[in-house]
Every structure is written in C-alpha cells, then in structure tokens.
Image 1 (cartoon, one colour):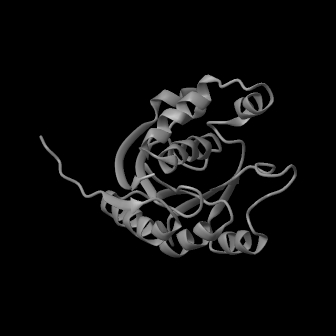
Image 2 (cartoon, one colour; image 1 turned 120 degrees about the horizontal axis):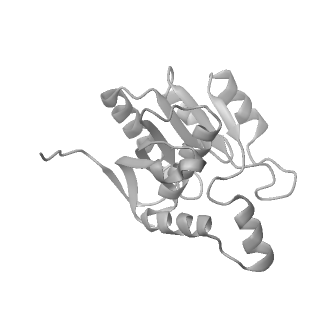
Image 3 (cartoon, one colour; image 1 turned 135 degrees about the horizontal axis):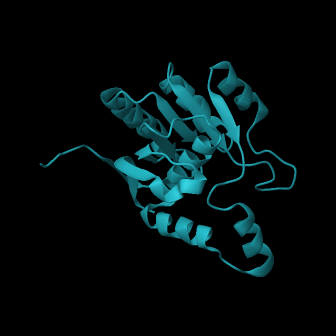
Length: 190
C-alpha cells in the first residue's frame, strides 16, 4: 500500500515560517484527531502564536531551562509567559533531554557523550527536527502528554518555528521507542 501525504518545505529555515508551520500542524492535527501539541518557544513569541492557532488543544509550550544562556536567567519574556498561561497552555521548563549534564561535560572537558551524538545525528534533518524529538521526550517525562498516542511537535531553527512532525513519544528511559511518524513541515536549506 502506498500513502501520499503533503509536506510543507520551506526554502530556508527561520522565524518567517512560524505561522505557516503552526497552521500546517493544526491542519494535520485536525485530520488525525490529535489533541496534544508540543511547541518549543524560547522568548514566548512562538508560544503566544501557538495559543492563538491551537485553542482547545492540550498545548504544551517548552522553553529553555533556566540558566541556558546565562546563569539564573530565564529567557522567556514574563509578559509573554503570562499570555501563554492565560490562554490555557502549559509551560514546561526542565533540563533539555538531549543535552543536560553532557553539555556541561563538553563545555568543561571538551568531551561529547552519546546523547549529544544523537542530537547531532538528528540535526542532519535540521535543528527543528532535533528539538521536536527533544521536546516530545521532555513533555512525556513531565507527564504532560500521553505516550500511547501520537502527538504533534513544532520547533524551529533559532527563533520561530519551521519544523513540525507527528511523533509517537517515549520517556527518556525508553528513548528508542520514540517514533517520528510523519513530517508535516521542514526547511530545505539549513
């Protein structure tokens, strides 16, 4: 059996693709009956846009862990955090599933561990693909999405969104049970 599905390819990566990525993800969510959406948002701008597009969904906004760019500092703008929460979405702040302590080892000792190698392999598809897998694991570990149903993850390259995938999530302790089921959108040039 052959199945033909639409994939949105962007000429280049970047935040200018955000709204089209979110709309393509919602279209596919409606078609599949997926109610759980996980979106990466550093500053909160993509998170606010996702709240507008995914009203009525179980929307999880995953932000950088506190201290990601500067010790003790959270990058998400407080006014955007407030808008996201008022819209009914959940915000997840936790250690990045594909970095964590291994990033600290690389920074201090120049050593790359196997988890960072997995992240680099996923980046072959683009930064957004790596982040989509990562946020699926993080949201599953936090108990915010089911692991027995497909979810849609949206992420990007730098800021904004340019990648969306349908994922069968898994907890970090069962990472290799995670499945990328469909690509909804991604940039061609990275």
